[in-house]
Image (cartoon, rainbow, N blue to C red):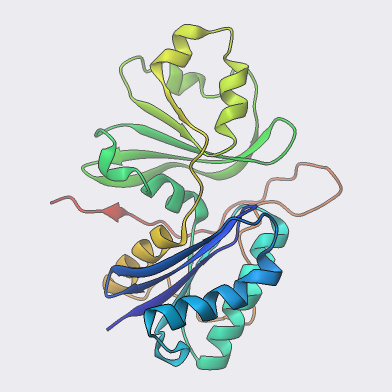
Length: 252
């Protein structure tokens, strides 16, 4: 039996979830913005109590790996590492953008592009581009930081018959840049309200556990989230991602 505690703190709000053998048995969304340090531990304790599960019964801890808020990611990582180190549990870092893209996967047509865009302030976004292939998400452009211009995504836009979904709070920036191009806006679907959820992270983590432990983090003490770029004033310094490739879904 796998009992996975999932933690998501990459944004202004957060969430936690418990997944037992692939089924979410409980989840809590923390709507109070920027309150992770004050509410995370208390929320986990309450969720475990509500689900009748002891912390010692948890078999894995899944964590939203980033990118996202520096402070939020640090708080989530510190809490998850403390549990894993103290109880000898494996830590499963799940790419935040993969969780966001996966939430609407069953509804997406085959061959659709899914552009996950997180607001990184000014006209910059953290982005990953996926494509749906026989019910799975395949990463076609790795996670990176990108400064939006009117020429962004020109190659995808040129694919006139391809469905394209822009999701995450960064999508709103891109939509505003296209406000004078109604034809392009009408061709694509913008979903700026999509946020990563711990429940989805637990589902992906279940798949990772089921299909092998190659991506389980063993060096828990030295694990750091995927901040994507170091904080150096206000400079934009890309950092090559070191994120394992995941496939989500079933081809059956």
